[in-house]
Length: 414
Image 1 (cartoon, helix red, strand yellow):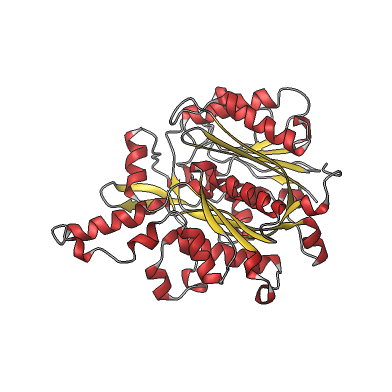
Image 2 (cartoon, helix red, strand yellow):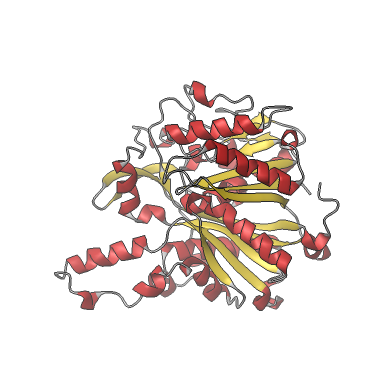
């Protein structure tokens, strides 16, 4: 594939930094996925009370001082940790790199809710006297904050911004980076997604009001995509950022390459605020395949978006059947069953957990499926135990979001 594409147009992933509820590096994360370790735990948040969440446990002070953590945001700290880890993993000569030629493109579901909620909670104790409102509020809540905090910490003077794409945002960050690299706007991109969603009570209250917030007596079994007894979403925080480069640049410096972004697409349902449209999801996958110059039967592994809501899981399965109705069937898995829904980070994290399949030929399972919903039956669905799949060459990663935004990326083995 892509033999006709010049090396300076081929975009590869050369570094990965992440924090997930069950791991703070790709090796830790992958090990948890292969051995069935969930990162979901009990959690309590103001006004909502006791609930469940995926909570990250990374060292904020590894790359920041205490004062910087206090001044900034949780999303910023997640982004800084992941970006620094990705650069370290990439082997880039960071001290000598031209940082004006580094771009930062970070996907987010939402930003600013946490900080505004916190300030309102504080001034409530002062009879809503706004004179005690933090002067840090505005830089904390601007939409570009997570990407901007990365540039401040790493002294990057190239372009930075966030991509607001609901839960399709992690993929969108990668797509934006690829486009900017191909345009020559940067030579190195830090791209992916971050989420601090569990710090806002509003997201829990909102899902609860929709009847879409998961409950379970055993937190590790709460996130149950495709299971007929699923009862909703587990909200999670997390982040995953990639170093992305042109193939020729990566090869010139002898970089290890995790994979090549061979195809991608984004489109819109234009049909409902929250209910997914399987026809448009299928169309997005078809557009990504066309962009990659691939046929459906060439895809070896599909990483699903499925959030453990009845409508979402079933509609995505309808879309997958429409796309992969002929020829060989890919293996299919889901990562949210381990960590919950990391919102803006979801697509990037879920892709990362599957990339080692290129090397070890194993597809991690979807856990917590005790009774498969008949409407979610797929020939290649991997349930509860990993499955060997030799010769994995192409991974298709789905990520969909509210307001009907769909994103698909396809990564090929190099």
